Image 1 (cartoon, helix red, strand yellow):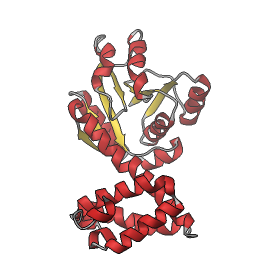
Image 2 (cartoon, rainbow, N blue to C red):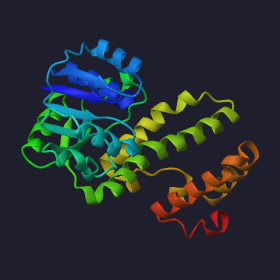
Image 3 (cartoon, one colour):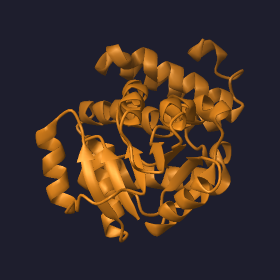
Image 4 (cartoon, rainbow, N blue to C red):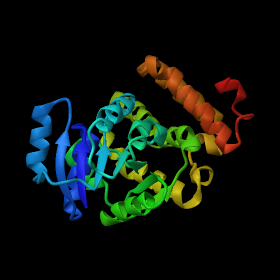
Length: 263
């Protein structure tokens, strides 16, 4: 497939790389930063042919503006954006000129283009499109060993909230843990096997069954000691820690036992 990329950020760079590795051609890269666009074109060997599909990988707030600009002069029969939060209707200016529209959201973190491209194979991809574009996007996802699934615009806000909880908020909890390990004089990397095992268990048994530790056991004295330590060593993180503890107690079904210490 011949694919034109709009955008020069992390997602655009990761997708351009993985598309080429999967045997597709990137015809062009367009973006406000022409130098960055030229660099990405050189990286993926853009051939400047006619695209079958335009992939819009820009900030959510810019999708509508890009669609309006492309609608003034577009040759490709299909166009998609890669946001998991924005409805396909944001591409309405393209639909009005006869372009088939949809969205193609890889459920994967892309902290930089190279790391992101390496992580994309094996991920899930949320697809919103009517046929025949839907089938084309399914084939595109499968071409780099991803697993496509359908999602409708009406559930995108809650889907994207779930994605944020899966990635962003887990990272926030890890940042808190990192700070506390450092305060204890322990290398935070020691926790990697623990974190990986917890995540694996949560997907195998479900989150509640995967819970271990003092809150799951109902060890009030231990949790009280933890709270005191956090207040001393990371006072600006205390509110975050106690809210996580409260949420954990609710999940574990031990909230009543901890009502005095957690409030």
